Length: 100
Image (cartoon, rainbow, N blue to C red; front, side, top):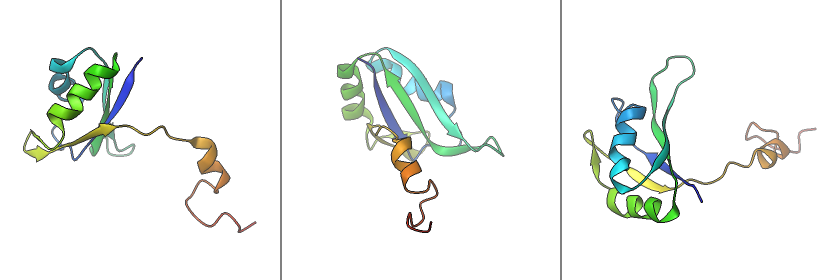
């Protein structure tokens, strides 16, 4: 089963390929994506890496969390599933849901 990891505190210089290259030694990476700003195209400083297997993902977390990647100490952990229904129930804007 695939497991997605969150990778935070990325250097602005790390792109999708650089992110993939850092994680490939730990197993089969099915996707590596640095999240970019919609307007500027510049990295937002975080990304996601998806591994084919759970064991490989766990090895990557243990090996890479709190290590240096391109001059920055990265944070690596299991990505939390975004719950769009929950966000919509609260108004979707993080504000008070009782305005209506």
